[in-house]
Image (cartoon, rainbow, N blue to C red; front, side, top):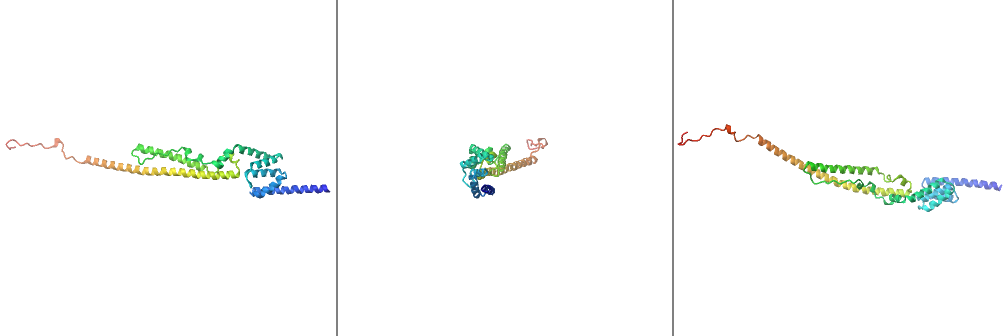
Length: 264
């Protein structure tokens, strides 16, 4: 009878642990980390391999606790010892994070937007004089402006393709990041994108202002020169059509010369 009572107690205990584990998993899914942590600690300490694994995850990713790789590794090793293959994968993840720490830190701490900056495209700012006076000069300036515009548009296209912030983080690095690192990386990238965009926009505004001023003065000069040539041409044509005051020599009347003595 005592043996039967012991078996019934064991079954009841297993059922309670199963319910606790189910509750803990639901809490983790709902990001109720504090409550989930409490249940996982209880179950993990009792030797539950799945709870040990999830507890290791929480320490690894800093969910409800301060991120602690050593504690995470300890719980994963205990879970792995019970045959949990997910724990084996988690231990491998820790090794990969250590190997790619510099790459993770680059995006989470040091990113400044060099990969999407205008300077990466080597856009040559065009030389725009105050005014051009010859056709050759006008063509040269316009070619410089066109090349700049094409390069700048390439920069804008690349920047837009990089949005939203975080999209450009390589997938093999992103999967190694914890939630805090990824959130920090996105915020840092957004700040960098804003700065890069503002700097490029200032340069584009400066170039556009030079272009507008150059075009206005050049067009004014061309129009003035055209008007001047039109006046000169009209004057020349008018002179060409005006009758001459001198008659041809063969049509002039003979000159009469008075004879000596006054008689003709």
